[in-house]
Length: 136
Image (cartoon, rainbow, N blue to C red; front, side, top):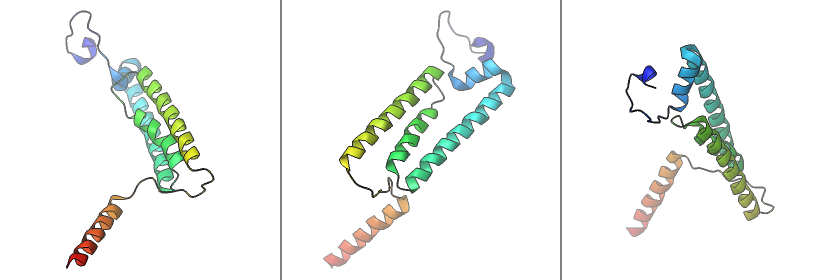
């Protein structure tokens, strides 16, 4: 690691390099750029898929894309940590979806997962001004 960073480490010190440094060391600068571009495209695709499902009110589909997408944002750990956290996120999404399905038997109405901040502010402001009118 000292060869690539210039930082001296004591003998026997274990240093975690993360995905970025691992790609640079293993694949040279051109390979690093290829891996980084691919990584960005994958994260963008996952984020887009989660966003589409959220806007459609598909909370179950949103979970399946969003939770593993959070795992893809880890850049400091090893590939083993990344893949295991993605697998755990997929498992968690599956379990939560099963619980949601049991909680709403026969329900075909899909509710939006999140409220836009502007809508929330409007709702709170409207309630506040309405309660002030009632007091006067």
